Amino acid sequence: MSTDRIRVGVLGASGYTGADLVRLATTHPNLRITLMTADRHAGKPMQAVFPHLGPQTGKVDLPDLVTVAEADWNACDVVVCGLPHGTTQEIIAGLPGHLKIADMSADFRLRDTGTYAEWYGHAHRAPHLQPDAVYGLTEYYRDAIAEARLVACPGCYPTAALLLLLPVVGAGLIDPADIVIDAKSGTSGAGRGLKEGTLFCEVAEGIHPYAVAGHRHAPEIEQEVSLAAGREVLVNFTPHLMPMNRGELLTTYVRLSGGATADDLRACLEARYASEPFVHVAPEGMAPATRHVRGSNHVLLQVYADRLPGRAILVSTLDNLVKGSSGQAIQNVNLMFGLPETAGLEQAPLFP
Image (cartoon, rainbow, N blue to C red):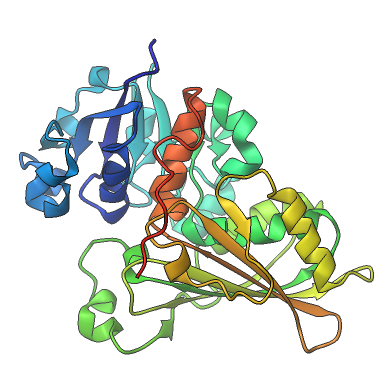
């Protein structure tokens, strides 16, 4: 099959992650969107749901939205799933075998189906597919992603946390039993569905924690950190909702190990990501901010020596809809089809 125009189907195109994937794909040199599903908006052109994706994109050939039941899978080479958690497994199980799949939901991220059932409240509905699902943290699994049929793209919080933690945990520079993650995200991370907690009056001019001691991204972070540490690890993870549309910032508090210093952590991160196109260690003294990566597939990391002896403070920031979701999905699709990993993702951050 020629890779110059890969045919892409987007499931859940009327959600925030689906729409951002469409936005990025319209300028991708090798992708062509041939299918978009959105059951509630079926029959509508994309512009009717998202006016910013109209003719001004320069792409007027976007197909109209259809229901999943009406989807013509033969019109696609790859399907990117942006459906809500718990709704994807059965659909993916029924897709024809010729399709590659990049899933942006949580349905295949947890390797242990028992852990999935514990955190998501129902038994896994396609357990036979789980062993073949590759965790889609691109910088760590790119070789397996390139050979995979099904890629489970990480959550936004885990992406920000793991890019920061995996190198220093793997190098033995911090104590994996003492990790505290203070996370903050824009409201788009909660999805586009109508929820009282994301109404303007509930979010504007304030900040609040949510899912305290019970957020579903915690076991995903623990799964990967445990692999790096070589033993089971639990993390202290608390997310907060911020009055902004997009963006994510994590402040992570760690205990140094084996006489390591904050400078050792910085050197470790710089060495690990020196050749990575999208992950960067910020210059010393620069405080990463969500506005430094907004609208882009880039991640900024930073390291500080704590005032408390033997401790350090790590910071990471990304755009939850791009590197935290749709951008990383495209990065993985690029790998799955042998394209340059950066194709369609080289946009500079948007400021202000």
